[in-house]
Length: 232
View 1 (cartoon, rainbow, N blue to C red):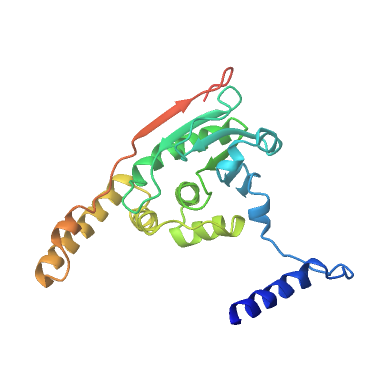
View 2 (cartoon, rainbow, N blue to C red; view 1 turned 45 degrees about the vertical axis):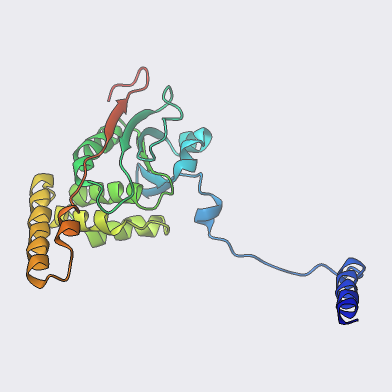
């Protein structure tokens, strides 16, 4: 009997939704982040330099309207319009141990070449959060001679979704501390790494083996694709 009563109550509950008379439409409003809605539109950080997600790379019209001529692609996907834009494709993972520093010289030269040619440069990764933001931040640091916090604030102001992973942030801090010298920044990070290993041995609180394996890796591949009738 109890089961039958429960079934009847459940049916009445369902029927109350099915046959309920429609009232006036509810006045609902939904505030969405414009960065999420229009994520296929390149976001300008400084004049001529844009940042974005992989969705931008498929929006040829949007890139053309923004005046983009050069693209740094760190998403690991093939160039979408190689006959239209000049590409620098870098294979680097969004991981703390990925070697961002080794990418900076090539990216800086590519960005400067694009701007000096009168064009504009888009830097994109997959989500438009970490890798692309880190590369643009590095360029701003060296070109404006400012430290990480100030440079990243410029990027963050333009694209609120920007968020470098902890490893990239540490590398960029070292890059600024060593006056934008990649080699010296690498040395600083290595010295800090060895100090942590030594501290781990003394305290025996951290696995020395795990510390020893946390070294920076190299990008798997850097590839330049120059569009026809365009000299970098």
